[in-house]
Amino acid sequence: QPVVAVVGRPNVGKSTLVNRLLGRRQAVVKDTPGVTRDRVSYDAVWSGRGFTVVDTGGWDPDAEGVYASVTAQAEMAMSTADAILLVVDANVGVSVTDEAVAKVLRRSDRPVLVVANKVDNQAAEAQVAELWSLGLGEPYPVSALHGRGSGDLLDEMLRRLPETPREQLSPSGGPRRVALVGKPNVGKSSMLNRLVGQQRAVVDETAGTTVDPVDSLVELDDEVWRFVDTAGLRKRVKTADGTEYYASLRTRSAIEAAEVAVVLIDGSVPLTEQDLRIIGTVIEAGRALVIAYNKWDLVDDERRRKLEKEIDRDLVQVRWAERVNVSAETGRALGKLAPALRRALESWDQRISTGRINSWISEVVAAQPPPVRGGKQPKIMFATQAQTRPPTLVLFSTGFLEAGYRRFLERRFREAFGFAGTPVRVVVRVRE
Ligand code: GDP
Image (cartoon, rainbow, N blue to C red; front, side, top):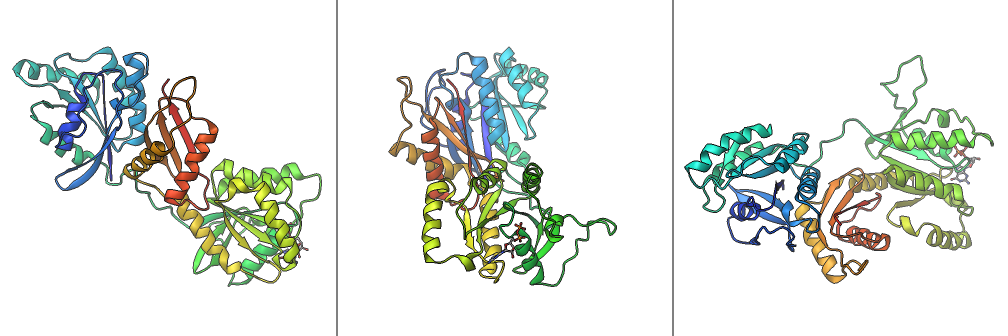
């Protein structure tokens, strides 16, 4: 469901407004600067439509200065919300801080509504027009305390919410893009020829007729996939020794052009640094990952046991990758490639709602709080999946979170929500 963030200086009445929007007293905490709240996001319903209210004032208890704290709120709102309510005290008028925040919010691609709060009497009403000067359109007069105007505000807010909330994805056009990569001689050309050979030739209609098509369209499992930058593979142009620099640049650009990478590894011989480096490139680029152990026809029981040990030693950090054991020579298990690609891409595209993430994070943190640093217990106030492709988890914390704890959270995040086949990025925003 859509997320609505409430932003504003301390004491303008954010919490009171949030309570009003929720229609019940679940957020009640006095809006005192420096007060840490336990929750900042709440689920609400208006006119039958559900939405999540994020009280950004609940985050960021330690920020020095109102200015820093409100600017941080605006940043948080812009990275999480589908709509933003900027609350201003109509009795006070536009302050320097309000102006600074408005300036930040004017860059937002999401709707921003100016809420003129504390309009409890005629004198306040006269002040409302002044708030046009924030450059964010018509101010909406409300009295959060008495409830006046909050219904109209909610109607307007729901009307302005984008059709597609951040939670949803626009479908990507065309066949999904796959990079087939691996060090020389692992069987990339053989694999591609095998995949192309299993079907009627699919011609790349987007490439001109005078130049060689760079990509190969391949039909697997009733679906067409675009294998990117395969011209060299199909022509069986070999990368001689000494051209590794070129080859690795080529690998990187293929990975960047793709949504998912199949890293081909020769399963019949020990893993090498180069195999690991290519996997690292995929993760760095944030692409979905399928590891295909090729030449499986040459893998006997003994080699298999050794390989599993090598994987345990060198590839523990990528346990989440999709894996297939194949043979380009015999065609073994090639049918498993498309389902693995599909699963990896599904994870890559997956978005978990802010509401679910916050109930998850509060449970995880309650069971295992972040390690104390410098005598202070960092507190995670709020979490959201800010992005997909790759999934990016953003944590808003009152203190630095150690790498070990971030990895722990990533593991738990995967356990709770899946994400097999895709790297997951964990970003921590700290206010110290
Ligand atoms: P590339 O450099 O990654 O494109 O590798 P090639 O496709 O040229 O393959 C290198 C060598 O490995 C060739 O001699 C292939 O015949 C052989 N090869 C490829 N796949 C397999 C496989 O699954 N099993 C076996 N036994 N040999 C393979």
